[in-house]
Each structure stands twice: as structure tokens, then as C-alpha cells.
Length: 286
Ligand code: C2E
Ligand code: MG
Ligand code: MG
Ligand code: MG
Image (cartoon, rainbow, N blue to C red; front, side, top):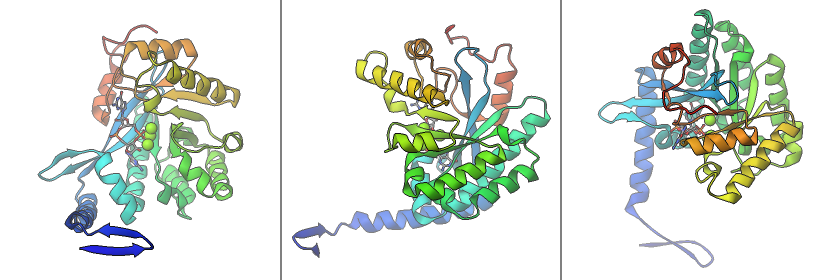
């Protein structure tokens, strides 16, 4: 079966298209149900200060205990939630739960900043800033213990509106970071104007560093530019000691990665950080 799609364009009808659509509808339904049934959980990955070796923050990453399917990773459902619009609800759940957890840690005398990933659709909601303000107040969390991770595509879509929201969030005292930096289309003008606290260098630039000279040069340039614009720079996806050594030499501020720790449930992270230096045995001195 061939359907005409316009001048000279043909698209082959494929049963998988329907299966795919059906799959997404089913997944949307299962996610809605899962939210009500408490099937979602946040894991937390520590972010390490390269100079001191301390852990000032962690990133909340959502997981889904989908019945019969074990632990499902966000890569398989965030995209669907963004397409169906369910991300607004899911994002709200993540924000509430991450803030509640950060407030518990603060109340226990071990304040740890929690970073929350924000989707475009969520950020574009008119009530987003108010939602954040309400949640902070409800859980009595000092605003600087919350960080919001945004992506370049969110910011350039409607730069003027985005700037207003970022300013309002920064005025609340919330910290802001630009996630997956280097993969989008940031204009340097925006970078200068947006009140961002941190740049998170996308993992793809770290993978073959320091062996690949071009990647190492890009990382070096991002670190220098971030510092010139008074931002901290965070490296994502650090898996090997050689990467860490190079990042240290480049003056990168923070890192996250399997080398230090994988994302883990809140209790596991607390136990881990309570150990003498909070570090695993294999972490080399920087
Ligand atoms: P991200 O925000 O860039 O998060 C970093 C991802 O890299 C996480 O994957 C983390 O587990 C992984 N990672 C960290 N260190 C390493 C490493 O050393 N090696 C490797 N190979 N991977 C590492 P995860 O948890 O599967 O999340 C994937 C993406 O899903 C996130 O990328 C983020 O864009 C999205 N996401 C996760 N949770 C949420 C959420 O609550 N809301 C929204 N909107 N998006 C989320
Ligand atoms: Mg992130
Ligand atoms: Mg990232
Ligand atoms: Mg991301």
C-alpha cells in the first residue's frame, strides 16, 4: 500500500506505525496508572566537587517499576510522555518528590542540593514558576537546595519568555543549569543573558577524552567559556580515571559519572555519603 504524501513523496504504509502508536497510547495509559499506584521512583546520582572531593549536590533521575518489566529507564518513556503531554503530570510528580527528599536531607542535617530535569512542555506551562515556588514553600526547602536542569532547546524556543521565567526562578533563589551543553544550538548571546549558574558538558564530549584531541579541546573551551561567564562547569558521564585527571587539569569544577557512583535510591545515597569520605575505594586522588 502506498499513500501519497505530497508532490513526489510517497510513504509506505507500515503496520509498525500503528503498532507504534498503539504502543505509545498503551504506555501513556500505563504511566498514568503507574503514577497513581506509586510505581515511579527517583534515583539520585551524586555530583562531586573536583577540587575538594565533596558532594555538594545530586541529580534526581526518574525510574519506573513497571509491573512485569522490572526497572524501566527514562530513555524509554520520557519521550512518550513528552509526546502525549503526560510529562506535565510526571514532571510535577518529580519536582514534588525531589523537593520533599531534599527537605528531608536538610532536616536531617545533611543538606544536599537536588537537581531536577525539566522538560520543555513543563517549562512552557504558565504556572511553572508558581509551581516551583509553591513546592519550595510547602516543603520549607531553602531555594538554593534546588537546581533546575534545562536544555538549550527550551531556552531558544521563545528566548524572551524563557528569560523572564529564568529570572523569576533565579529571584526565588533556585539555581539553574544548562544540561547536555554542546549538543544544542545555544547562541553565546543567550548564554550571557540567561541567569545560569552552571553548564553541564554533554557526556558525548567526554567519552573519548583525553585520547581524542578534538573532544579534549572542546571540553577545555567550554570550561574556559563557562568560567569567563561566571558559571561553574560540570562534566557528565565520567567513567575513567584518565577523564577525571584531564578534567582536573582543565579546571573543571564538578563531575558526575559511574566512576564515582551510579544513580541510586535516596537511602543508598545517604548511606554512601555517610561513609568516611563518601568516596568509593577506586576513586583516584585528583
Ligand atoms: P541527563 O539529564 O543528561 O542525565 C544523565 C544521564 O546519564 C542519566 O541517565 C545517568 O544515569 C547517565 N549517566 C550518568 N553517569 C554516567 C556514566 O558515567 N556513564 C553513562 N553511560 N551514563 C551515565 P538516565 O537516568 O537514563 O536518564 C536519561 C535522560 O532522561 C536524562 O539525561 C534526562 O534527559 C532524562 N530524564 C531523567 N529523569 C528525568 C526527569 O525526572 N524528568 C525529565 N524531564 N527528564 C528526565
Ligand atoms: Mg540532567
Ligand atoms: Mg545531561
Ligand atoms: Mg538530558
